[in-house]
Image 1: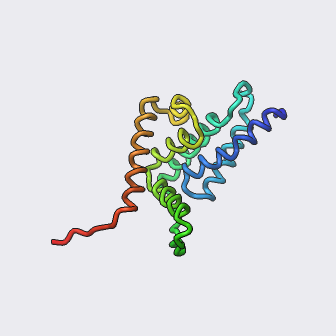
Image 2: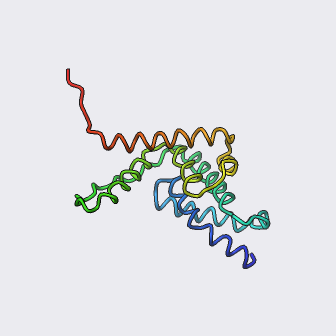
Image 3: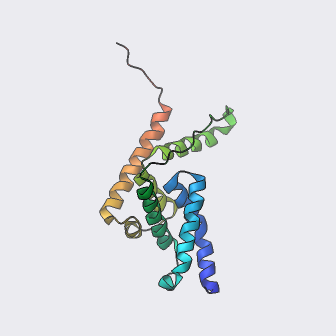
Length: 167
């Protein structure tokens, strides 16, 4: 591998880590997925010598490796239980609001989280995300719209008091 390929690959690793975390919801599994993806990418760098941005290519590899993994295991990954956050004081309101958004993001479906990350965080074009996920561009646009709506609902739901129905 030449030096230019090294640099392009190194620049894409942080984004690949973020995407792997979204795919797996498990930090250890995400690191394994990054390793597997990089290993596969290194053996196939000759296929992408003309790409300046390796992220879409790496995301496609990671996505397919993750699907293959779950097909082999035929089980779902559950994220480890989180301990309750310590009580925060009022000076940390912006931090608490951000934690609410992250919590709501974690409750989205896998498909919604993936498309929000790829379009919203990584800034990829709809067509590129379509290629990565192997779905039509219209499906990407639809999922993105539904994901944004769901995220807004989840964040707003957290701010409303929980009421019980009493008969």
